[in-house]
Length: 238
Image 1 (cartoon, one colour):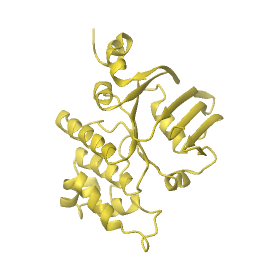
Image 2 (cartoon, one colour):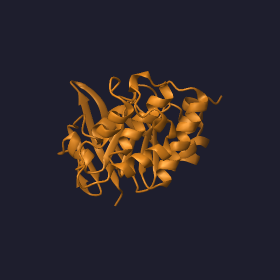
Image 3 (cartoon, helix red, strand yellow):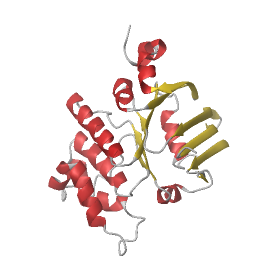
Image 4 (spheres, one colour):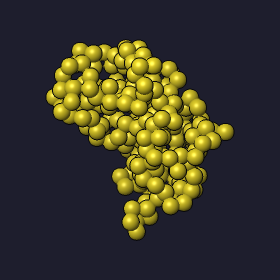
């Protein structure tokens, strides 16, 4: 049984049929990526998994447990955390306060948040330097670090990443992807949505290609990188 199983999901926005029978799996310990053009349904897939958007049909299970019937905060309790597109940090709060909110559902009296903060600071030393700084004054790269760090404070088993490289300089993109691999090596399973298909396929073990709300191709990341359709549509190859 896969850690995450999405089966025949149909999600609508009003009368707009956004996801048309999506099915995918993510095994424990994997990095799996979803690639596709804008509007293909990548973000809607993540939103459906984490409960922000409810499907009209289909199932989503985490370790065999039904997520469709759960509320978003209950899905966080079950071990799923999402870093949204655009980061979604609380701009008027400090770095410290943002990180604390990532652990909002945990009983502080019985769980040592300090060790988790140190883990985040090990992954993102810059956040320790900016600990008391207002989040809205951070650079784009630092805000992305904070968004990921905040998600890690919930101790997720499955981390959903939505466009982590968006708006970042190339050197920062490489750093973020190195960090994603590091987080994965430490035991967190990752489902990655990313416009930079080449970078995503370079760190993933498997991938799915979405077009108009449907999965049109799935394979190992290496095979997808070599696939002619993928190369022409998403990797900039002639």
